[in-house]
Image 1: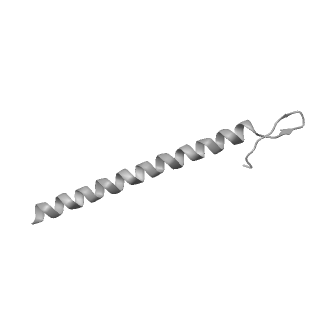
Image 2: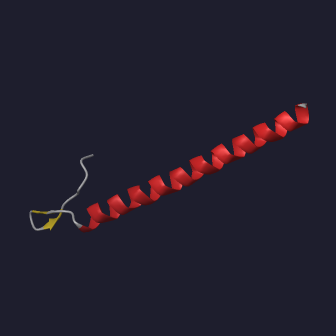
Image 3: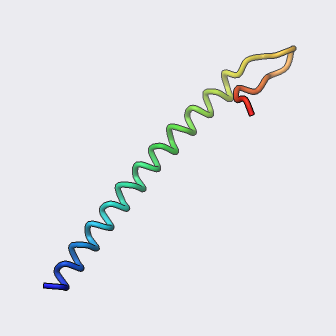
Length: 55
Protein backbone atom coordinates (compact mmCIF):
# COMPACT_ATOMS: atom_id res chain seq x y z
CA UNK A 1 0.00 0.00 0.00
CA UNK A 2 2.79 2.43 0.90
CA UNK A 3 4.76 1.89 -2.35
CA UNK A 4 1.59 2.57 -4.35
CA UNK A 5 1.04 5.84 -2.47
CA UNK A 6 4.68 6.83 -3.02
CA UNK A 7 4.40 6.16 -6.76
CA UNK A 8 1.14 8.10 -7.02
CA UNK A 9 2.60 11.01 -5.05
CA UNK A 10 5.70 11.03 -7.25
CA UNK A 11 3.60 10.98 -10.42
CA UNK A 12 1.48 13.85 -9.13
CA UNK A 13 4.57 15.84 -8.20
CA UNK A 14 6.22 15.31 -11.59
CA UNK A 15 3.02 16.21 -13.45
CA UNK A 16 2.69 19.41 -11.43
CA UNK A 17 6.33 20.35 -12.06
CA UNK A 18 5.98 19.69 -15.77
CA UNK A 19 2.86 21.84 -16.01
CA UNK A 20 4.53 24.66 -14.05
CA UNK A 21 7.62 24.58 -16.27
CA UNK A 22 5.51 24.66 -19.42
CA UNK A 23 3.54 27.63 -18.07
CA UNK A 24 6.79 29.43 -17.18
CA UNK A 25 8.09 28.87 -20.72
CA UNK A 26 4.95 30.44 -22.19
CA UNK A 27 5.23 33.41 -19.81
CA UNK A 28 8.90 33.85 -20.80
CA UNK A 29 7.99 33.81 -24.51
CA UNK A 30 5.25 36.43 -23.97
CA UNK A 31 7.58 38.69 -21.96
CA UNK A 32 10.26 38.37 -24.65
CA UNK A 33 7.75 39.31 -27.37
CA UNK A 34 6.57 42.37 -25.41
CA UNK A 35 10.18 43.42 -24.82
CA UNK A 36 11.06 43.08 -28.51
CA UNK A 37 7.98 45.06 -29.58
CA UNK A 38 8.85 47.80 -27.09
CA UNK A 39 12.48 47.82 -28.23
CA UNK A 40 11.52 48.21 -31.90
CA UNK A 41 8.63 50.66 -31.38
CA UNK A 42 10.29 53.00 -28.89
CA UNK A 43 9.75 56.74 -29.38
CA UNK A 44 12.37 59.23 -30.55
CA UNK A 45 13.18 61.92 -27.99
CA UNK A 46 15.33 64.87 -29.03
CA UNK A 47 16.59 63.25 -32.23
CA UNK A 48 17.70 60.02 -30.58
CA UNK A 49 15.92 56.86 -29.57
CA UNK A 50 14.43 57.08 -26.10
CA UNK A 51 13.82 54.36 -23.56
CA UNK A 52 10.41 52.73 -23.59
CA UNK A 53 10.61 51.77 -19.92
CA UNK A 54 10.76 54.11 -16.92
CA UNK A 55 13.52 53.02 -14.55
